[in-house]
Image (tube, rainbow, N blue to C red):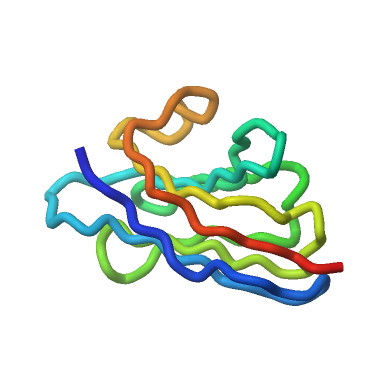
Length: 124
């Protein structure tokens, strides 16, 4: 069990950009697929973007394609979410998730390790 830790949320204006960061705080030899989920008020948790442990595969929700980019950092088991052209409907709590299983096998499954979440508010 590991604990992803998110940072970078806050309030922005529509059309602006924001970058979220996530790191697995524990030292581990394991490689993790990592993902960003979000949950808006009254909405279900949805997968925003996911990336394989070696960055060879990425996945995006249709609603963010062309605007958001998921990437891995140079430090092992770090991941970023660059969000451009933000819209009010992007307002949500964003959660980082990590899992040792192959990313393409768990896109529709429950990920095993979750962060506490970071709030993103996009003001119209």
